[in-house]
Every structure is written in structure tokens, then in C-alpha cells.
Length: 116
Image (cartoon, rainbow, N blue to C red; front, side, top):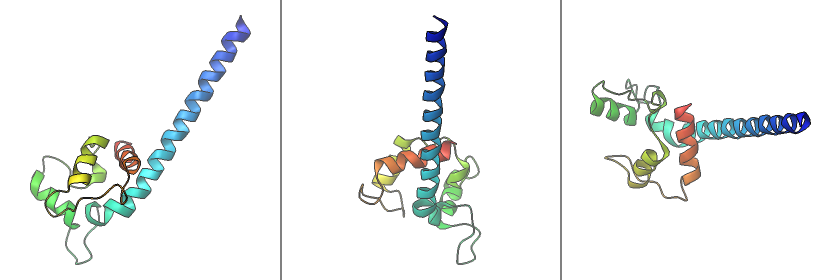
């Protein structure tokens, strides 16, 4: 009986370890996709034109008026469904992105990265 419980405990620990590794991989992938697809407009840095913020970050700063962080990397409340809505429909000057340009799995990875 003890052997059965020990085996189940070990199996549970291995399952948790694999799940954590998969989650870590999703967060890493999400960071990579964010840096490639989102950060050029929504990153924390200044603009290439020497403006204080990148265009997407500046637009969100004006919209939120300090109520929410303007840089998306400073947000933890952007779920995959919320991101999908903005990514698929676009918003203001932000264009929409087709699934061939940014897949649903990539959006989920971005959400995991932002939530991390």
C-alpha cells in the first residue's frame, strides 16, 4: 500500500513538473512573440522619433489618464480573450491581425507572459 501511495505521489510530482515546464515555455514563447509583434508599438521604451513613449503606449496613456499602466508589459489583467478581441478587431490606429499573422496560440502565450 505504501508503495502505491509513493508511486502516486511521484507521478503527481512529475505531472506538476511537466505542467510547470510547459507553462514556463509558454511564458517564454509569449515574451518572444510580444517583443516581435507588440513591443514595437506597445513597449516601455521611447520612440525612435525621440518621443517619450512608443505610439501604442502613448495612445493608451492618453486613454487611461493614469488609471491603468499604459505599457502592456505592466498589465497583468489582459486575458487571452481580451487580447484576442483587440488583436482580431484592431482599435483606433491599431490594425487588426489575421490568424496567419498572429495565431490564437500566440495570443494565449502573450497573455501568459503578461500575467506572469
